[in-house]
Amino acid sequence: MPSTQVRSRPAASVAAAVAAAALLLGGAGLAHAGTKTHGPKPRTTATATATPRPTATPTPSPTPSPSPPATGRVSTCGLSFCLDGSPWRMHAASVLGGLDHPSDTVSMAEAAAVNTLRVTDWLDTSGAVATAPYDETRWRRVDALVSAAGASGLHVVLDLSTYRNLLARNGRNPYTEDWAPFLTWVAARTNTVDGRTYGTDTTIAMVSFAGEVEPVNGSDNTLGVTTGQVTTFYDRVFATWGRLSPGSLRSTGGLLQLDWASGIDWKAITALAGLDVCAIHTYSDADRLVTLPAVSTWCGSLGKPWIDEEFGWEAGIGDAARAADLTDTYRLVRTAGGAGAGIWNLGPQASNPTYDVGPQTPLALAAVRDAASAT
Image 1 (cartoon, helix red, strand yellow):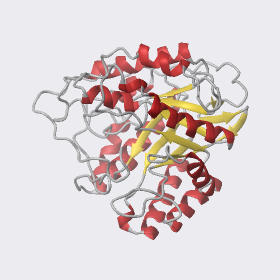
Image 2: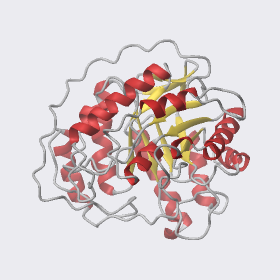
Image 3: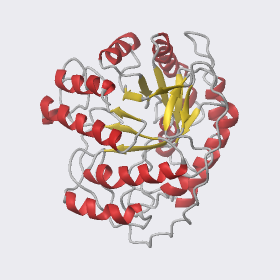
Image 4: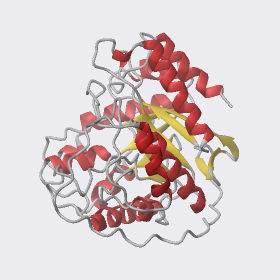
């Protein structure tokens, strides 16, 4: 999603969000608990149709012991990450706009003490389904950044939600489409810079498939997406990628809209055997005070780590205020046992509206850098 996009949510009291947390932690469906400040998009209006019953809450089962990770591969170690068997925390940043100048992007990441770059939104979503997902020019830009990151000892989260967005913009239900041909192509792709194959490149710490699912029970669901289709989709792509790239970590991508009866059966999704890492995005008080503790508790019971894959504030609120908000969110994630967190967005843009953090926002940049060493 563009770093220039203005993000807002309808206002509501923090107290209402906190009160709703008790219900969500028990797995009950919630009424809309949207709150203030800087969300990625306004809450969608629930349709008049009845809310489908969520699937039965799966009984958590012990997570099997993983196979020994390949050298340089990020793996899960209980509720945390490991790199080559040693504890490792994901300190990430999305880098929309960073593909054209990979060396500058890596230098900025090093200045922020970021160890993971999230690559997202690089396909032409208005292009043809048959050709746009495989556009060589666009993939070469990804190649360059992945290679530059690896050469500097950084890792990458490869976010394939760009393909979901392309399918949806072409009027197709992305959750019933067969992703196997696309995923097979991605796993077999040879990086044109360093010759590494995507499916075995240990620079790629994790693949995220389709975060920020639009609410099934919302007015923006014009493709007839159902709760069951979304859950089955994740089960299918996790299994496919597991066969194509054994040992690499799999995530839904950060989920939103979990603090009300949106029709996203997040407990069933995160309990899927093929999901390695739970992920959320936090932009509102409801995300932070309701969704975050609920996901922490549930994924902890599954023996799976969780991350806040994306959070941020628009630069217009001021550098000092944004630095304080970033610090507070990092602290909240750590306190709740998160295995990592990532900002939206690392970049040089100074003119508003933007979420970019970089040399032009020294206090926000320092907050990101300081969080890398916080305990």
